[in-house]
Image 1 (cartoon, rainbow, N blue to C red):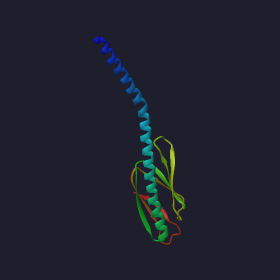
Image 2: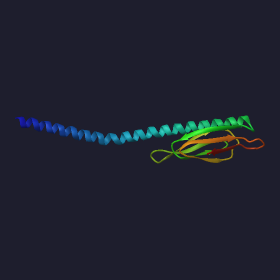
Image 3: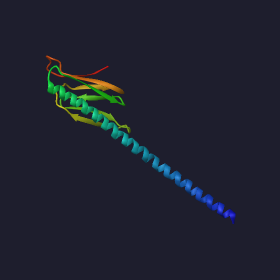
Image 4: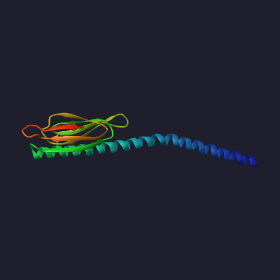
Length: 142
């Protein structure tokens, strides 16, 4: 009679172990996907915030006219490129799954179309409108 109790306990233990393996096998990929999605949203919002700072600096220099200058520090976790035109500032951000998302902020200026390479870490970008010049300049220093 004692042998039957041991067999029942072993069967319950086996069922519990198989259930745990199945639960882990199905939930880990879903958790990983959820974490990647949350990180992508965070990276997109960080980039949009940085582009908004740059757009604000561009509009400030444009509003103040010749002789004005603004410096913007952008901290990036991955290398990328910021595209600047007379109507917007944008970045084609690479997401964790390998796809890309265009993050765009509007700004009015007289800047020519420019691409600014952003490296990992702190990047200092100078927006200026030199005295006697018809157009503004934007460039990365350092």
